[in-house]
Image 1 (cartoon, rainbow, N blue to C red):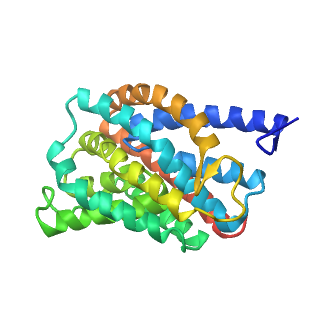
Image 2: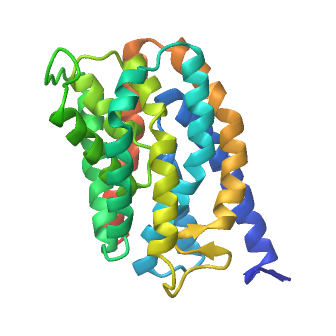
Length: 277
């Protein structure tokens, strides 16, 4: 039997894999203040490869679908962190507009960007963050967050790079906030609030950027797979609050090490894919 152009047995395996990955994604979203894109993108990449999605549209489809999935996950993670009073609303307000504009620019660029661009951005950002966290390197740019143009520029960078990575901005915002002497728990909590600002315009942008592209799987709107969203989002939204509880139970160093190892694994996977494996 074939459903939506996919054999029923294969579809069942995909559904199980996506459900398990969704649960893990939600927990990681809560623990690390990320929307879960760093997990979603590699998982979707492997699944779409198995389904035979062409390489030239596969990475765009992974990123766009990831951004759509992040929408509810980010809401759940942000609400849980905010309830604990560790979100810096001043930073969120300062970044809101430039982050959204940067996200829109990045999603438009995605229509013409080759697959390697997405992977290189992913590896560069995740890799730098992993080295700093695992090595316990105290890279410092200031005693507090900047004001004015530099703060605005940070917002643009977060939006553009996040939209090309398919993440909710947590990795990059965590990096910038800790560079400016903010505690890791506050960085994680505040980063969670960026998810919706990036994911919503980003997902809409990827729908438009992928519109009319050939080789996309059934039940896709541009670069967003509705099947991926339907299976991933509900379970990840349910498990995100459990990740938040775990984050606040961990020590500062334990949280840094866990996040660093996680990012190193993700970076390694995409380095391997850049080499053709």
